[in-house]
Length: 161
Image (cartoon, rainbow, N blue to C red; front, side):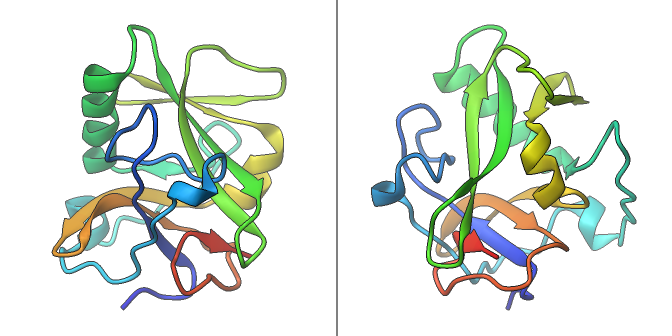
């Protein structure tokens, strides 16, 4: 069972196919709360992540591989990943992932295994310290957000407050 600060989401949407993009397409959102597979090796080994201005979030190797696969299958050359938080959902906020190529004013830009990760200034405040993993199990697969800032999550696991 996931703790209150963990959220697993998996949806089917326009660019990410079976990966995710929530928030912009709430009617397509499918939340997964219980996953049978263990977290990635980095998390299983108890990796301690200390966020910084340059790297406010951690993206595991397994998540990086899933992002690269999604870009190869459905993205375009030069695509990176935009990670953001948008208003909505039954708990107040939803995670949003989408392809992007360009930095926007105020973005924090990180490199994760050769993939550019863009996080807008507002979302950094909600996501600081978050670890994004990719998990799969009997109920499906998706990106798992372990967000120490989330005080609670909804029953479907796709929103937080």
